[in-house]
Structures are given as structure tokens and as C-alpha cells.
Length: 230
Image 1 (spheres, rainbow, N blue to C red):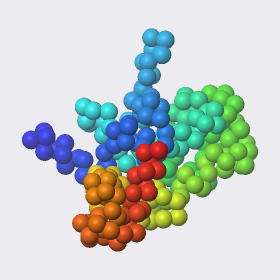
Image 2 (cartoon, rainbow, N blue to C red):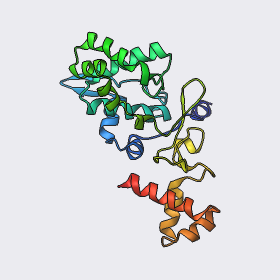
Image 3 (tube, rainbow, N blue to C red):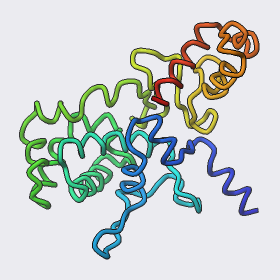
Image 4 (cartoon, helix red, strand yellow):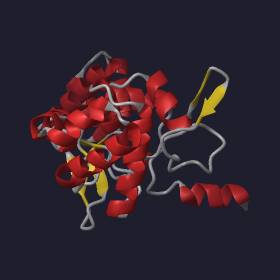
């Protein structure tokens, strides 16, 4: 019974190991593990920045919204923002927006600076002050490219992500293939297409016949798999 209940909770959530999340986001897996599941430093255990959508699992796994949210954490860290400040910003934004994953929320683009101003008062983080006071700095970090490709539901919650710039051929959708990359038109996962491509001597035409998809779709899947493996 417990196994059946767990399986039902996985529907529409997406399932990613830190290694898979690293492939799709380009963020090192060690950083993802640290941010999501915590770390130990000088004898002190520090918790993750938030609880995973799959925190009921015995394994260290991320859900779809975790996957998108860590892209923003990565952007903050590149700007020098401390994990303490990011944790505080996430907490305050969750309360203000009533969203479990506030950085991905569209509203963060407009209201994020005010949240950072409050966080600076709490933490004194100079990197946060820069984001709070300078619109240009905020836009440099929370770049439109972070939101590009994210498809939102009516309430502003991310529901799918098209990871290839200016293309909707490939999608990560938690309601399809457990959130793994698939062709948006057919639902065929890109990894299977790529494996078939290699098995068939890199004959795209043959693979298109096997999966009953256009050659252009095969090419798109192969290009995507090459990109994330690089």
C-alpha cells in the first residue's frame, strides 16, 4: 500500500537525480546537492535551502519546480549572494507570493528587489544591497533568459520548460515521462531517440522511420542530447 501511495505522489511532479539536474541546467551536481540537501561545515550541519518536492522519498531527488528554482540560486551565487541571504529571500518571497517556488514565479521579476532590501536589513549581505538598490544589477542577475522557455499556468506557477532557446520542439513537463526531455509534439523521449541514433549507425532517416517522427525531430533530439552531454 505504501509503495502504491508513493507512486501516486510521483505523478505530475517530475523526478531528477542531482546528476540529471546538472545535465539539464548546466549547474555542477555537487552544488545542486549542497543547495537542495544541505552540507556539513566545521562540525555544523546546514539544511538545504528548501525541501524537495520529493522529500517523501528515501533518495535525494529533485522535482520539476526544484529543477527550475536552482537555476535562480545559481544566478544569485554567481553574483556573490550568500546562501544565508538566498534562504531568507526564498522564505520571504514564499510568504509574500504564496508560492512554494517563488524565484521561478513571474512576480519575482517585479517585486524581487523589495524582498532583497528586506533581506539586506537581516543579513547585511553587500551583494544583496547591490541587487536591492540598482535596477540594472537586478536585471543582470534575474535576466529574462532565466524565464525564457518557461510556460506558466494561470496562477503564475511554472508548468513546463522548453530548454532550447527560441524553440518548442523539446520540453520538460512533469506530466510527461516524469519530467524528462521529450519531443513536445509526440512525447518520445530524447534519450531514446539518441540511443537509437547511435545504434542505427547515426542514420537519422532510419530512426525517423522507427519512431514515426520527422527527420528534423530526430536532428533536434540528437542536438539536444549532444549539448547536455558536452
